[in-house]
Image (cartoon, rainbow, N blue to C red):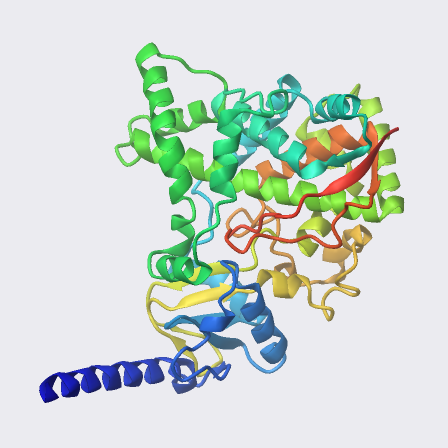
Length: 462
């Protein structure tokens, strides 16, 4: 019995010593860190997959004094980069020295442009968002509409047509079984946030974010691919483009192509829905800005006989400003995540990161920094009119496809958001109602920030 007690005491002492050493990891490297509980570390601060609170606190505390600050996700050390020059090194000049874990897919820029073209073509043949909203208003006899629900249906339809030539008829058949199964997986709530974070942090967190949906969709998609190959079918969609690209390459078997399409489908859906809903919510709060945008859209669309193309979308300058400002206020990702592939000495410092260290680029904290963005909590699309002409650091806005490697929001997502806002704001105006949320709330269970509250707005025909 005494031996068992000694064994237990030794094991417990060893565990405590291991934990204590682990939680001074950054301190031993000469990097500032928050004081952590000697046993639990930051455990009680792990409240969401996107770690907004922890990253914001580190950024606010050390941004003016340190190039990097340290924290812990369980016992895993995480470096939060606070200096733009170091961010630039990691994201550009020394890019090959890091694994970039927040990259949706490895689709080249040229293929992304092809997908944008497919989305615009699919928008012509799909059930239009404004028309579906009109039906809802007519059947409910109510000007108050849950915009989030109808945006979900629209985005699912558009992606289904553009990627797979599948019309889910979600807008016209709101009780669609596929829609409900899809949304259950998108909005799935794990039993414990801390347990899910633990599983993900030690098993490549970003990739695992798609596992449930891959399990749901993979058999269906492989069946579609095999049927196309057997019957030599080549519909005009993005899946056909990817299959043509992969022909003759053993590194791109059917299952890999299917997984790539599923990841693109899910990330595009979550990001698009988030931006569209947030944009409509902010425009409803800011009627003057909504009027400016509606006037621009109506004027340009009338002159082009209501035909959409990438060039026409580029003509809508204020629309692009509204989308940028929405992304700034509500970035789909709180941070970009990298992993050091080898020991990395940061130039002009005494700091060397170890191989395997996780590194966070604090996107949301930068986008909400009042020293970078005046009145940072206000919706001011006009700020981007001359933003990049004022000598601003390009890394102060990591939210679009200006850089195809690091932009959070791809060109295809920009197209989906533009299609939705153009369709709605040519016919309707939106305002807050008694059921409108006081603020946007986001799921703590999604890595890509996804709205959780219903977004009721008053809708009035123009």
